[in-house]
Length: 478
Image 1: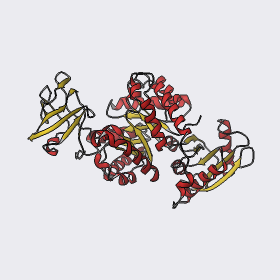
Image 2: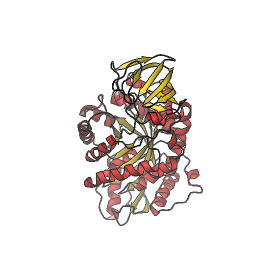
Image 3: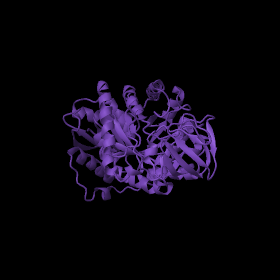
Image 4: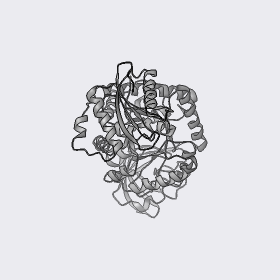
């Protein structure tokens, strides 16, 4: 069955072999995520090479997303690897400490003491440890333990309510960007952007690094900071899509606020013609167990019903025991949720103005396919823009995007309800339309008698040139 919602899977020790990667792609992965918070440059190059080989083996292109580490503020290392913090005990975060113990630990972000005040609440290890700042003395942050437990090397630190000024792009990110471009990343995820300027700076650096390779990847802003929420519209404008990164975001704004924010972010992204990925702990229990909890099933299904383009797996596929089974399970949940998704196409078009010819053609194709009961929509596209516009509105008609551009084919792997297909079509319009129909029949996407809605541009192969809509019945002349 056609699945509209895409799946992002993170590569790690459990999933970095060519065989496992091929099985993951066959199971339904659309985007492979390289987490630059872990591994070396050579590790990422090797994984990217394995992904391309696995995709070729399976016969389906997938996108590669390079996820930059960003300014993850962390504690340093402990002499014994970990300590136990007791309730109401005192603990010092010391920017000059080299090796921690039960009383103090170092910091990788040396400016943290300058940004804190008495009474601030610090959440460590995704909120499992809670510290209250009692006072700041020079490079030392003296705290009282409000929620104790085990604290180990390099765990993250967040300030409740956000507001830390660490820049979105670190020195490490600037070293990683050329590596991401060298290995052919189709998507770049920028961690912890505060505003549009962070995304614009990242885009400039990425475009410069990508110039020798002749392509520009799509930019995904990971919404993880509390201060990014009021500026979401400007961040969307400066990005190609966003990620609802619920882990760090929940630590800063509180768990209870995240579900409503998720719905709001998905709605805003779709309205702005941007893509959106929902991430973090979606199938967490399957790191160890062969089946998910019912709560996790509901979580994935709700993201699908909200209209997310993709759902993402992190540790579940990077280090979990069942990477392939997790993907198969998530795909099944997505399919079932999509069956009950309500189509509100007519409502979507009310009071809506289309400013581009291509966008008007795309919307006309959706409207026509919906009311005619078409079997499929076929978009012959160079950049993928027509397919993106179509994918912002939900209907139970699959969109097949045929392109001769390999980078566009891979980038469209993220678009909801879009199946990208490589086609070296003729420069003659009628021949190209006939080739498109033949591809549908060959792949069993349509049979004789089915109504198909096609969009195409003249002159052919012109970026941004979609200007024609045609309705045909399989078996008739296009």
